Length: 147
Image (cartoon, rainbow, N blue to C red):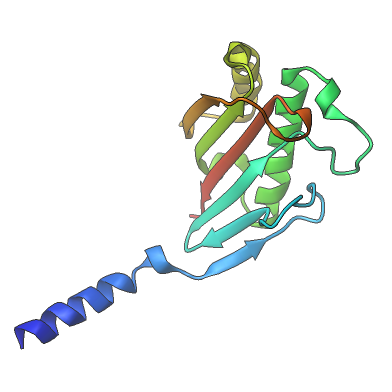
């Protein structure tokens, strides 16, 4: 009986929300994925937004030629479009990871970031990387939580 109880407990533990169904979240207004990944995935009450680059959804502006502040605004605007498709806003973001090609861009990126997010601010990591796709200077991925 003890083995059965342990097996049942393990089965129930594995059926927890951590193993929730994956639901595709896509915004027709945000830039399309450029590889084999999704714009965002909802699992349980969490929405995981893929790393967003400063791509113009209309394809008219080449943000790789603009400064890091303009790129950061475009990135966060793209994230907001993807969150909107999940009926969420930037206020629902609980975690963000910011990737930059030059850590000295921290003040400029941080100023733009602070203009979009409000207290309590999301948890955040700020990481310098060697290179980003298509000449981008910044990429941001976020996790948002549904209430």
